[in-house]
Image (cartoon, rainbow, N blue to C red; front, side, top):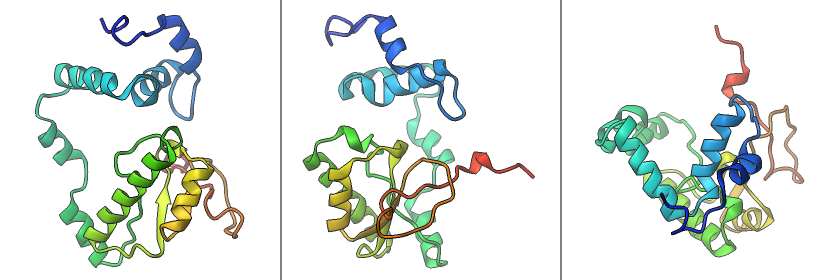
Length: 178
């Protein structure tokens, strides 16, 4: 439906490029995720996601998100009870795909959000959405008062100055279920 308007390639091109099994998802699931997360243009992704969400989930996005995600009041309660809340990007973009200027905007919005919640923003922590980062983002984080950040690479890691912005960690799915 949108192929000519957005000058899209054939389906096989995208499937061959994106359909690579990853972590807990089959190649078919990863194909759909990557297509809708970063491959298609942002405005087209939004149109398609809204159509799919309204058709297969609900047209009441607010109620749906209220049921699944913490709100700011809940985050403030956690912070007031000595829990640490770090940044994860303001719009949950693949940060390495953004220009340095766009990365800076995302980091500034993230810091403002954390500050508005009551977190310190001079020694804050970041977890890269989708593990997506590059050197320009790391430099922006360093200038912004971030002290360390996490990738999605799974491993034990020892913190040192060389790896403070590329820390590996484990996904909760990697631990045995009780």
